[in-house]
Amino acid sequence: MKFKIDGKSILFRNGREHKFHDEIREAVEFEDLVAVRLEGDASFRNNQNVYALDYHGVLLWQIPYRTHSNEHSPYVGVYRKSDTLDALNYDGLILTLDPRTGTIQSEAFVSVAESRHRRIRTERRWL
Image (cartoon, rainbow, N blue to C red; front, side):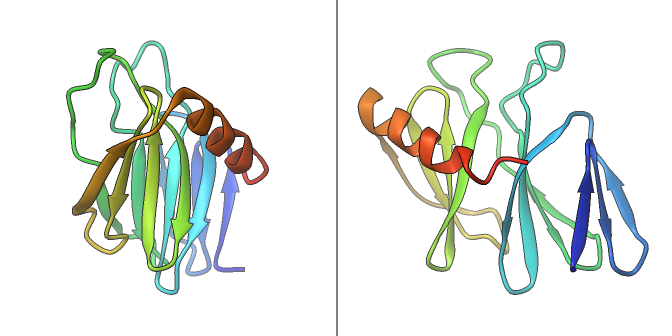
């Protein structure tokens, strides 16, 4: 076990814990880090709900702020695609990120049907 998730917290093997402002809903593992998606909190109006931490518990990055169609438009799914991380936004925007830096490599909009399919597919890994 490299980490354990308990509600709003993620605990690493070395005993280091990182506590977020909201529940952790998804975790995507890479060789040297884990990316997490938090549940969108209605009182915390923000669409920056994706983070990455290394396995020592060091916060590496938070997804950059973006203007979306809906002011409060959180990311609703994250998944690994080869060596990149895809983050699906409520508006149908998919950002492809470098998991180590959080740098956006590409972006695309998906149709409503494809967006629903991706959300259903990622639901199986929700925590």
